[in-house]
Length: 441
Ligand SMILES: Cc1cc2nc3c(=O)[nH]c(=O)nc-3n(C[C@H](O)[C@H](O)[C@H](O)COP(=O)(O)OP(=O)(O)OC[C@H]3O[C@@H](n4cnc5c(N)ncnc54)[C@H](O)[C@@H]3O)c2cc1C
Image (tube, rainbow, N blue to C red; front, top):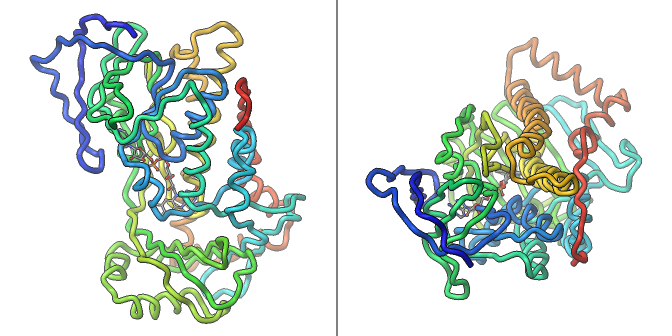
């Protein structure tokens, strides 16, 4: 433990309830002294992406603190489910967590893509990749619990939860991170670190405090999500149907459950939430079809805003953004969490390589390698999901013709189908490799 020096450049961050607002209260408050706990890395945000980074850094031997604002039960009760692509599976395998996750997730035997009432259906199959599967669907809770299990086995990682970061102060090559509330089990109030990793989601307070600008837009659509228990088995088939209102996806989950991700104009989506369950199900059935028999709603549906956002920089001295803090995209194609997991693995990979070359893992030149690696790959996927949404939520005749021609090409020319699938599964581009020092859990 050390007493940090007097600092002169301070910044206060007060997250509001959804951590979307920061206020700079530095005037007249620029002198503090701290009694700080020392870490190599402090990660702010214990969602899936922050936890992947913490696990990988911890296993590589870094001393890490991960700070999460939500109490554990709230975080794992989020009721979200994701398509997990094959690159993310590789990352979980390298962390030694996949065998824990695998029994609780569902495999895709086929992904079927269609355009409204148009008869042509593109079927992506495992043989397109020469593998046994083309991805998985996992609940947020399952991934989070496995990662927390992994973190608990690492003596060099401290989880500080629930707590929020209220102040970060850059001092030389270190950053002082001050926390608002800490749980009774953990007395750390102030942390000192070489590198802060912001994994605090799309409204990242750390990104705003660092004055990193973003570009993007809110879509005219929102996303309705719900769990459905169909009468007949889903046969491990995922459906993505493009409707003029927006894409409608059915994802297979364990125990015969299905997850719907239904994109609709914002007013329609908000209206759907106001409906009684039987009225909601009547509306849903018209999109879902009757191929799985009677449908039962499990739990309550919820609505998420849909936006595209990209940070103009991913790094600054002593700071790196990962996951939704750096970028977020339309949920079509289920890419969001996978991009974030790839960011986390790439950043850890770059930091480990720097250590083997005896370089400072937190130097701007090292962090820039991460930025160069990930920014263009992320921008490509953001562009692709945006194009898909605009082209398929469209009734202009020439565009309808082009997209139907694309479906023919995809279904009938298997090398193109397999190239698209390889891309969606994260099997193109540079794959990060995590080098583990500590035994896998
Ligand atoms: C409807 C919908 C469906 C989706 N479906 C898919 C899918 O099928 N597949 C897919 O890959 N992606 C999907 N996504 C995208 C995916 O949900 C996000 O990309 C992913 O959740 C981002 O993870 P993250 O860890 O970066 O951020 P988050 O999940 O937002 O986590 C950020 C964490 O930081 C914490 N935090 C925030 N501020 C602070 C602070 N100041 N101090 C401490 N902690 C803080 C928060 O409590 C939170 O736990 C979907 C998104 C939507 C909206």
